[in-house]
Length: 225
Image 1 (cartoon, rainbow, N blue to C red):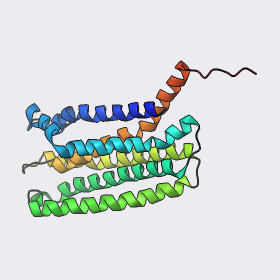
Image 2: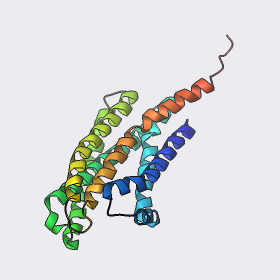
Image 3: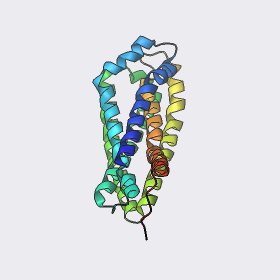
Image 4: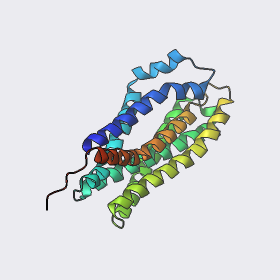
C-alpha cells in the first residue's frame, strides 16, 4: 500500500510541475512570454515549494495507508496527517493575506521595505493558522474514528481552498487591470496556493481508488477451511 501512496504523491508532484507554465501564462497574458515562465524551473524556491507540498501529501497519506493495511492506528500517522493539514490551512491563510494586501495597498506594492513587512506578516499569520488548525484537527482526531478523520480533514481543506480562491480570483483580476510593476504577482500566489491545496485534498480519495483497483487485480486467496 505504501507503493500506491508514493504513486499518488508522485502524480501530485508531476501535476503541480506540469501546470506551472500554462497557469502562469494564463494568469499574466499578454505581458509574459514562455521563456520568462520556463525560467522558474531554475529557481530553488520553486523546487522548495514543490518539495514541501509533496512531502506534505505523503504525510497526509500516512493514516490512509495504515487503514488500508489493516494495521493499528497509532498517534504517529495521525500527527503526520494533522500537521500536514494544519500546514495547508496556514498556506491558505498566508495566500489570502497576500491577495488582500495587493488589493488594498496598491501604492506600496513596489516598495521593497513595505513588501518585506508584508511577507513577514503573511509568514506570521500562516504559522499561527498552522498551529491553530493543527490543534483543531488533533482535537477532532480524539473524538472521531480514523476513517472519518481522513474524510473530514480533506473536506475542510477543500472548503478552505474554495474560500481562498473566492478571494484570490477577483483580487487577481483587479490587480491585473492596474499598471504598476509586477501587478498581480501576490494575487497569483493566492491562486497558486488555492488550486494546490484543492488538488492536495483529493490525495486520500485517489489513494483509495488505487487501493481498490489493486485489490481487484490481486485478490487475497481464501484460506482452506
